[in-house]
Image 1 (cartoon, rainbow, N blue to C red):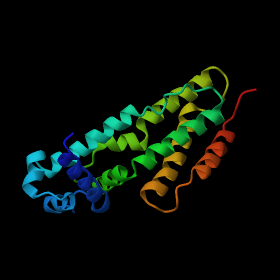
Image 2: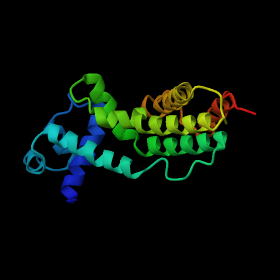
Image 3: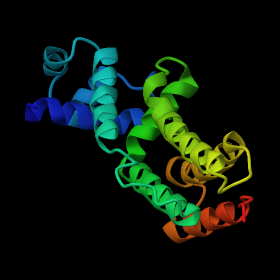
Image 4: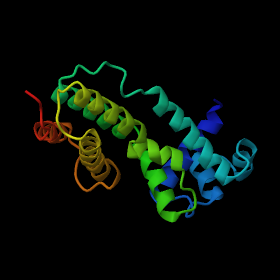
Length: 191
């Protein structure tokens, strides 16, 4: 990708994350990128096109980061710890883009549903439901797979959103691991 285009996209991502889509002007993006507004429009047809291109390039990077690249062992605690740590790294590396999307959703100008679904964990939720369903069918766990999936996803996503997006507290992998261990200990295992 052209370095000018990358500079514009990085400047826009930073400003969108800070102020939200509706509050950022193209002149401001151009100034932040160190280009003139004409150059911005030469590379992107509109502010919306720029925003969408940032999202598409980031969705592609998320899709390539398959959170389930390693086989699940069936050891629930260890499997959940592995998934939680991978989610932690994904949020950490995508903090700015998540903030950008959340601001856009709040302003309802650019909801970016597909990208937001990725971070709400729709694809992870599906994998986790399949994982717990398999354990339930094999008789390893007694609990409802959907209920366990919701418990796990809501706790982990809630923690990650409050730390990486809302900056309520410092993100800490050890805290997330302790929380994940607690979730695993609440599951009803078969004997």
